[in-house]
Image (cartoon, rainbow, N blue to C red; front, side, top):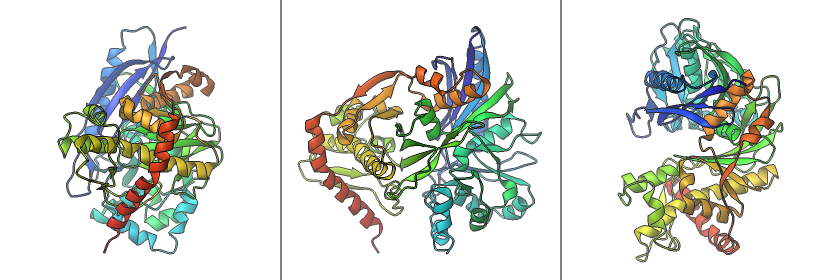
Length: 502
């Protein structure tokens, strides 16, 4: 049988990657290009959508050229994207109205407080499964409509389009102003605060609450299914799937059964547990969200715990404090001591997300004594990721009733063996890393390949999954960390109280 390949575009927070996979789920070619981060004011984070579009075209063309001499052909394109990042552009010209407002951007805090005070605010959690927070795309869209002169009137006339990053890319890939397809998938739509999570349709009451004209919204489609044809590439390709990056990682980790759980450890960390066709309403500070949908099939849901700062804390140790020269050095420094010396770091640089949702919390270092060295601080930095993961897992166990039997992990921080062992101990659960670490891109490729028949069903995808490493809990360390956990909880409460001070 002639080999068939799938191209995945992973449009991330700091770069865009185009990766070609074969039917065994193996990486065949990869190209990557970073884009600039814009910080025009404190708390504001922006990207240039046109730069990202250009990088997508470039990396995709390079990857396609890399495999042009191989037997077989690339037959489909899948897209994974940074979620919640908001783009508004002109339907006629394709020019963005302003730079994209990134998911890390906090400018909508005052707007969210105003909306939360309105009597209809409880509709947000009831209809979307999400918290009313500036983390999501809806408040960012409202900010653009309120802040750019003439934007609201133009949006109401249908002259402006809104989308998260996959919508922007699909529209451009399929023709842009010349017939571009304006769509999103259910996972990305579920991150806007504008979609009813049950019906998977834009909700008129939520549109009224946020003041968003329906004319500017994309059509909501399943995650797996044909979305259009990418004619802007050297080889026209069927766009067969799109998923938000964390749902793509869940898909790439083949977590298709209720209870199966993954966590991606990058700049922030995102833990998702598949809850099947049941929408589990969180009572413990998690997000009830869409996991994925195959065309013609019911929606699958997930519980999600979003952690804002994990890998970024290591970067802070490197770039702001200068205690290490590279991210990899943090493990060596942390191994120079046997424990954290009683030191705890709460990385609430822009508040805390799940399960606390304390937007005003601020970072702190607790337990400092003259005994604490830079080694102890490095260890506390790594342990902060484990403690935050434990907070989320405890909430998830309480919400779903599906106890964690193993945590599948991916992302750059999973190369840190000390951290992975700490995770196994603090969670009292095996931690497993797959052979293919590019799970976000692989999930996008799997979605597109399913749509065009490269893979027959999700069972075929499961057979591609192989373990590369596993960490098992050490009973003695589990007991010691159970005893230390209240110290972490106390530090978190101090972080929240500091932010709430008069």
